[in-house]
Length: 221
Ligand code: MD3
Ligand code: FE
Image (cartoon, rainbow, N blue to C red; front, side):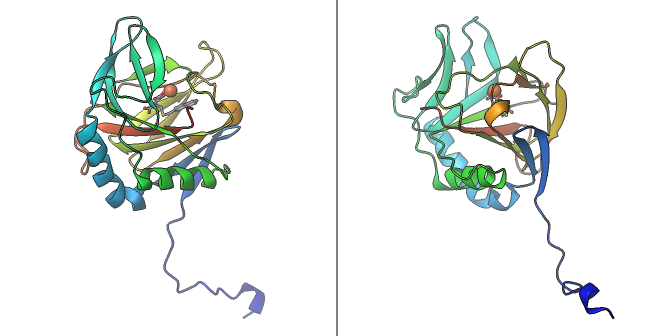
């Protein structure tokens, strides 16, 4: 056999490579990236939710969001009749938001690195909970101070169809299916693109039940 074609790895175990798909100039889907972290992630999520349970918030326009949310980290995203903002305290308890568990921070950093962002120090993790029928209309995220930092989002539970639009609401959106364990990293020029989530379809997820949970890590302060 020609030594240059000899396969050194012929009898090695097949390795499940993390699959990376580019969906924008500086945006990547990392398929299944969170799966090996779940045994650490889910108990940490329970700890956060015990201190700051999911709740449905009111938009400035007076509508109740179909998505319920919580936060951890130094800053948490909230909305009420007076507007959208980041706060240090949970308006429901008056206490600071729960600290960001180490496993959350480490996972967000590992995913950002995989997408080419060598330094990412999130100070905020918004936790969104979707039950079947819940959706997020097309919007831009403009409440953060550091647009240079990427956003890392972790999808768990029921599948979702993510809408990734352009810089104007009327621009055509691409549809990106997001499954349990997928992570998306958005950076730089893509930070101000419109985006949303189509209504979640009925279903049962073996580990999470009848819901989709999404973590969104940001540098908000
Ligand atoms: C794309 N959440 O909380 S993932 C949000 O699945 C939000 O819960 C969705 O949009 C969800 O604001 C989408 C996170 C996400 C966050 C910011 C983005 C995607 C983004 C900014 C620009 C482009
Ligand atoms: Fe958003």
